[in-house]
Length: 125
Ligand SMILES: [Zn+2]
Image (tube, rainbow, N blue to C red; front, side):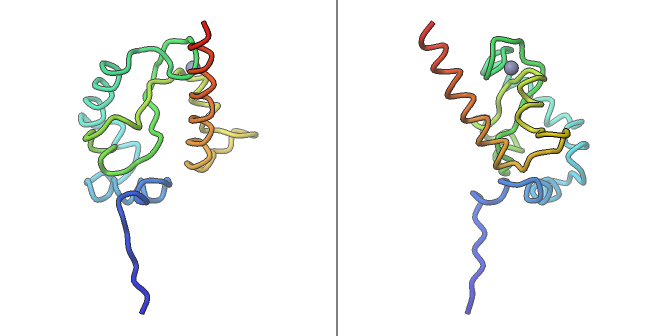
């Protein structure tokens, strides 16, 4: 007999499972979540913790990027996977050629690669 095991670690690693998590929290769309008081509080908390500078370049940050959408991220229980970014870096992460939205795992891989490059650059200043 096959057993389906759903762990929190795979719940929120795609836009589909993000939407499932949001629905469990009572948000029918991601747009509604982004307009909520909850997201506004999380956003302010991340800027306070990590600063208002882009995590990937010298620009000022204007938004908070999600590297994943587990329940603990969406509820603000942890801010470990949320990062202040500028518009330009964010667009580069999330959109490919022809402005096509990249899958979440691809955006995440690009983020981690750019972050490593940026940390190396800063370490050598
Ligand atoms: Zn940037």
